[in-house]
Length: 352
Image 1 (cartoon, rainbow, N blue to C red):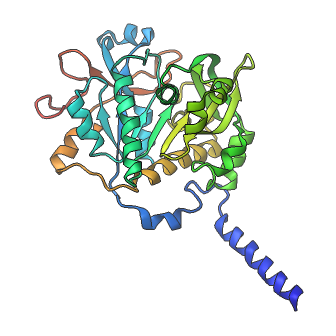
Image 2: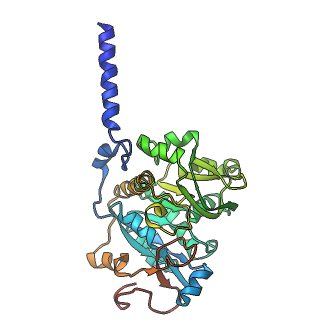
Image 3: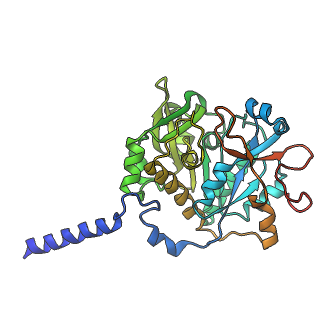
């Protein structure tokens, strides 16, 4: 009788596991059904911070881009593919404007690029975003931040209160992730389907396009970083330097990726080592879905439809730069940092 009871319980457990993982490439967290009761927003908006144009080739091909900041269209599409809408957060917005946007959106993305991010408008606003996410979580509100590439480096440096990034030979380098022991406890990965884990661990599909990174040695030897963040994965650059490639705040919805999932689906320059396979696409979609599920758990919104419309990126037209050799983007949205009308602005009298 005891054997039959054990077998029945065992078979029930197997059935539950099979039902939970019936799709090994599920692009939502496997606990999505239990999360649904916590969702408060079905029209989420995500602020994307612009950064200065630094690429000489872009300026040579598009001279008017000099002294501009930009948002890569791939980040906008990344948000949209998971059911969100992108809000413009220029790196030269005044403090009052930044505060108003942060209180109205459901999360923020800090992208990376070639520009020096230290001591500029990007760094100041990134610090505000970081502090706002922490303040909201202390109130019981989940307001997520996703730092990608240099954005991840800046979040680590903000925590350490100093620049912790060092040169790495990791430009145009796709790698499988080396998962840390803490990965299974991480919010980012613990509910990922088996196929997502397998692809990230075995395929060289995590696209790295960075000249700097945060070495694991610096990360683990820093009390501030080790206490605040959980390492999810590491990688080695071409010289064997081990850098932290994925990490998240232990107690706050702050997520950091040195690699760039948005390029998998939306960047097509053939000179870049981007994996566009179906498995890689599923991974990129999982990261986007995970982030947007986090963002949907707060109910922040703009006060009026008109205010929302004025801040969305829909009324801008991106500029094509995919023809530029080694361009890491297909399209970018350009914004004048000096006086003047932004590129692709429908109505400068109406929009910021």
